[in-house]
Length: 311
Image (cartoon, rainbow, N blue to C red):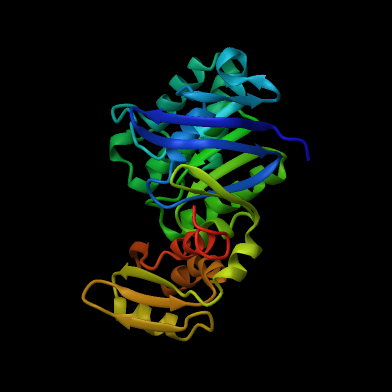
C-alpha cells in the first residue's frame, strides 16, 4: 500500500541530547504499533509527526506534502498525547466545541461532530460533566475524542490505554482496530508488547531514539517465546481473583502478595485479549493492572545482541 505518512531521515536533538536519530519510516492505511521502552523517543517522534515541533533535520511528508510548510494539511492529523493538559473547568462537550472551533467547524456541523466523538469513545453520559471530575480513564477518552472529532486521515495515539479499566481498554482496542479497517493511518505507541499485539501485527521498534526494526510482530515473538510476562492486578478481593485466574489455561502461575495478584503467562497476547472478559465475569472492582516483567526489554536485548551485532 502507498504510504500516507513518511519521515525522511528525521532527527531531533535538544542541546547535546539526541531524542530521535535518523528516523525514516513509511506508514500507510491500517494500524501500526510504535513500541519502545520509556524514554525511547516515542513522544518526541509523535510531536514531530503531529507538527508540534520541528525536526532538527530531515523532512516529514503527509500525502507527499511537507507538514510544517502546508497549514491546510494539519486538518488531516489527529493527535492524542500521552501528557494531560486539559481544561478542568470545561465540560467534555465544551472542550470538544473549543477544539473543533479551532479547526474551523461551526454551526450544526460542529455540534454533530462533538456528539459523534463523545459517542465513539463512550462518553455520551459524561458530556455535561466537568473534566476536573473525570477519572484517569475518562480523561484519556476525552483526549481521544478530540483527536477523532474532525475525522482525520492520520491518527497518532501516544500510550492511549494508560489508566483505563479493563472494559474501557477492550472498547478502545476495538475502536483502534475499526479505524484501521476504515483506511485510516493509525500509529499507536506503547511500552507493552502484548498491548500492541491486541491491536495490530505491524510494529515499529524504537530504542534510544533509533528505529531498530519494523515488520510483523510474529517475527519478534518467535525471538522471545521463552520469555514469560508477569502482570500485577489489584482488586477488591485479591484472593477471589487469584482463585478465578488460576483456573485459566493461559495462566501459568498465580501468587497473592499484600497488595496484588501476581500472574505469570507464557501467552501474553491471548492473555491480554481474554483478561477483560474474565474480570467482568468475576464481578470484582479492579483498581490497577501493571506489567511487571516487560517482555519488550527482551526484544531489545535480542535485537542489540549477538543476533544483529551490537549497536
